[in-house]
Amino acid sequence: MIDRETFDWGVQLTTRPFAEVARLSTLAIRSEVGLQQGRRRIVKITFSGVTGSHSLRLVEAQVWAVALSAIISESQRVLTEMKLASGTSKRKR
Image (cartoon, rainbow, N blue to C red; front, side, top):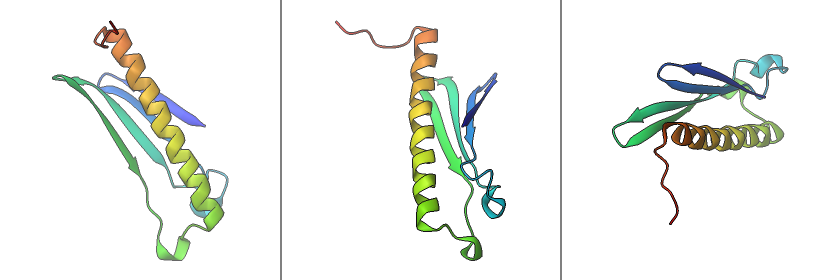
């Protein structure tokens, strides 16, 4: 599940793919889709790391990759939504 929070600077998306796994429950992926700055909108993606003693197993790494892909897709959707709302999207001729 991806949580969405709207702020005056833009939109923050957050997912915690291992919320139910105690040893990995603090791991999160965040995307910040900022309002337009000049001619561009800024999208920043951050995520927490793992330590050697709590490294991901192969199946957990696959789940992490799917969650990261999902947040990237959702960030692109939010970016398009924001462009359309502000009327700055390019029109096809």
